[in-house]
Length: 330
Length: 264
View 1 (spheres, rainbow over the protein chains, first blue to last red):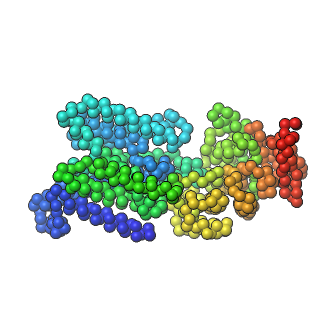
View 2 (view 1 turned 180 degrees about the horizontal axis):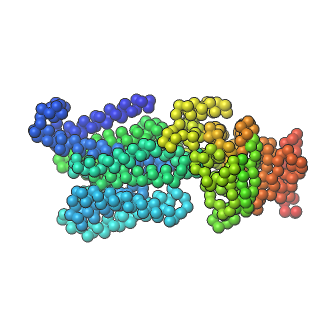
View 3 (view 1 turned 180 degrees about the vertical axis):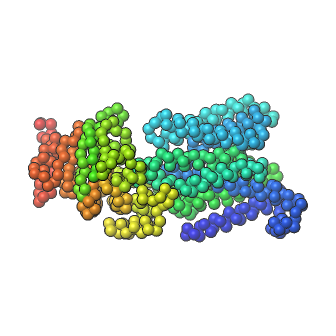
């Protein structure tokens, strides 16, 4: 069963990767792909579209889908709550504030946008953790409430900055960023985000068993021999880097981190070790499909969060109705 | 084994434990009795380091617990909490295998060997049929057995159990405590469990501690001279004059006469 699900997910990922490479405003056929890969189409429009636009976008989308889903899986485990998403500690809000500042005060250069949103995300989570510590008491509750507070502050800042923005130009750019899109994907973006995502992901792979024990609760984990504080902090830091790095290249892509771990558990069955890797594969595949739809459904490109929110909300409703029978533990 | 000296704990500014001292002996089941709020759970959690203490020293095998790493501590003390509250769905054998965590390298996880051992321990506890079932779907009694199996796999010098039989029916209470006692005697482990029923403590514990007014009111070994009388007196102090204590065929029998309540 486990093996079959992995074969299925790898096939799904391969298929959606191929689909994303071929499908779009300038369609490529599998035969074209053969020519491009063998070098026979060198210098043509086809090869240009594939190497300079399609492939980098596909790789970046897959990477971000995997990163967001893994971050969601990790946060849901850490908080022992299946309804937690990667921005539970305010990472998206902080990243948005950073991105808007870059648009308003640094002319919105891509480098500044990415740097500021990444820094904004990390800073907000750090402040959430400090606030939770200052509140003291129950760890889960405090972290969630601190995340809500920091999220609200970030939201206030976002509204204030949007109010100050020039409505004819800057405001549209800001709104577009807040809805997420991979249309500005490039090899350069991939080069800057991939090392962070791969590093944080690798650390989480190493820590995944500690994370599993932490889902028993802090006290039980400690009594079984896990250094709870350091393990928890490392997991939060890695999940935050995953989210901030992907948000910084794509803008806000909502719901993926919340839904994919659920989907994996519901459809493929609960098994922590398997679900960890299934979330990564499934997240990459689903975001590739969403992005392919976003750029092919309408003549002009749709911001990706419109699709992910739509699909995510429908899925969550179906999930909750299905769960009514008391099938699941949380 | 485990020595607790002058343990003093405040919770929320309120004194809960005031200079509590005792030592656990190997191969001995020690039961802690006390009213609700007497500090039984606080005692366990303070020993395990989940709660800060305001005074006292804790040592296991001659080493202060504060100086041990989490993994070293887990090899000294195993913990069975009051209820199962997993944040994820695990199979029973997966859950039991987590008892091996302290013996694994920092980056490894239980493998085939640990899982096989977990299943073997479950079978030894007559719970072989639970293998493969999700932990959250088990009855309270079955979950207790899974915890016992996990504590056995953890192979710690001391077991600390927080009201392990409170929510179980009569036959499962006896089933659990009997198996726990066998394990403790066989492995020469230390064992501290909190419990509400004096009859069960009398039947299964080798030693009884009674917590009252933040202190130890009674600390007696079952084999010691005058144990029965001392226990009767301590229980009288705890529950008031309404309590009737007697023994029948070596078992403790309790009665309650509310009419006498408050007459002194």
